[in-house]
Length: 589
Image (tube, rainbow, N blue to C red; front, side, top):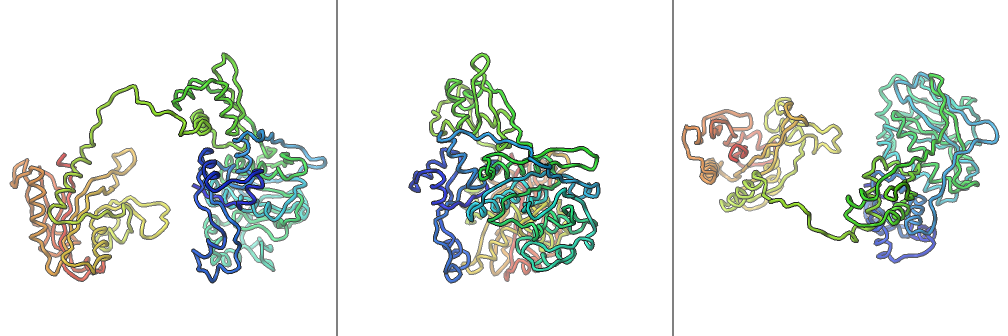
């Protein structure tokens, strides 16, 4: 969930009253939000960088509020205040209007060169807007929140805001070779080519995360005015020439991207949030966008649409008994202007351009539940009877866990994700042979793949506890994940049991004895017959030659046990011999 930081005093001023921290926490809960933290800029810097760095920082109290990921209209102070005021019935939802300019409409022309990079764009103008320092900061912060959220770190949409009075339309959105693009970027003192900028921003903590979006493309997108002045090179940086300040009166907003729908949503959110500060409140000046095929669109759309939901459906889904009139009132409090129509059981809901999260009747039902109050919904017993039963695999797991502990082994719980090195290189196996499920965008090298064996997690646990008295006897019963093209999701989970014995001697006989005990508990006798189990000499890259055995039970291979190879022990930063056992317990269900 995104977190919005707002100054407490500024928030209370906008709400028209003050709250205690407990009262505001309760208000947030009622509205479906969560007051995550009460802090200050000084306190944040002190925690992250130390008290020395925090000297001189602001002591202004900040509320950090968790907002649902799809409520883009609550990502800034303006939207948050408006939503809460409507919820408390202090104001009515404003009506947003798109107006045509008195003179010539601002035009953004898209050329065909953008087709393979970022083919879509939308634009609008906030005319005669009045910024203050706090309003300006909120305007910039909303763009950043949208970039991280719906814009998917600028991959889908990038926002550019410009001082219209410094520019001359019409504007052109095109794509050029990096060497042909030269301009003075934001916060720089001289001009650079696009190639030079990409090299400069590789060391920029904020912008380097966006470079990959276009750096390998033959052409880079760029927006210029009629005089050739560069407004921006989306999605990387805006030009310094058209930068907005607190004194800016007319703002030209452009949203470029690869997703047309999201570009329109982002534009609608920005203009609806800040048109409040325009001379004509909640009005937005239209801009025309001309596509390469000659088709012209006027933005922002600011489209209102209507949905009809039956009152009895809402009552049934939420578990309440409210009249249609009361339900309409609840929905109106959630910024969804509603009225009862037709046979008296139908509710017509007007969905404003700020509520892009409303896509289905269930979204409307959810808002009705929030407005009614989850704590006010009476608990009732279901009308149908079912007999609950523990999932057989989990029941077997629980029984084995208790008996493993009784055998003197300590249970550990390790991460389901690990590095490629853990399940491949360190165990002497090629990564392609592991059938591992890879994470497409891992946040860290420690979590690149889903584990295909429990052994690395246990060995890493031992490495972190080497100072503990010997012997160390650990076990884990958890799922591993293997690629499987026969399943609908392309992968399958298997419940494994893994045990490790770590001491001055390998202790193979202890691990072997543990296997016999497990089989005894599972009522599987030793023997070659179909219902029995047997171990046969085997080899494995993770095991010492001649000290490895494969385990067969009920006619199938279920795992291996043996003494780990010295190379494996060394790679996991261990210094003493180690024996391990790992089996699949699902065949015993």
